[in-house]
Length: 147
Image 1 (tube, rainbow, N blue to C red):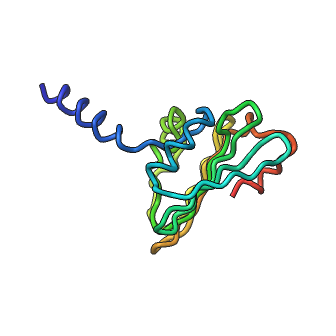
Image 2 (cartoon, rainbow, N blue to C red; image 1 turned 90 degrees about the vertical axis):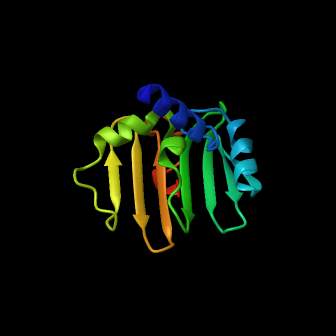
């Protein structure tokens, strides 16, 4: 009974947090805009686009979308960390498994695997970071541009 209740509560709570998430399609960006009550701006580039959402609280999320319509990178900056489990989607368990132990809240976090890169830094109401799928980044885009 306790396990059933725990599963139900976790599903119920996660249903309210909708992020585009790595590996999902372009249409999921609109869900983020609505959830954040933010302004969406699209910046078209050669082989990819950047969907930039700015919320009223100053949080900025940039979602990098390939010409095939898949989110291959996400970057953020704002007063607090985003929900990484929703933001990384199916890649969150890979991120957790690759985390250095122990993780100190006041130091930058850097996870680099063959399939996922996550970099988080900042503190005291000024957080920023990025996550991307190295094998999905278009060849015309320098990795440093995902920010």
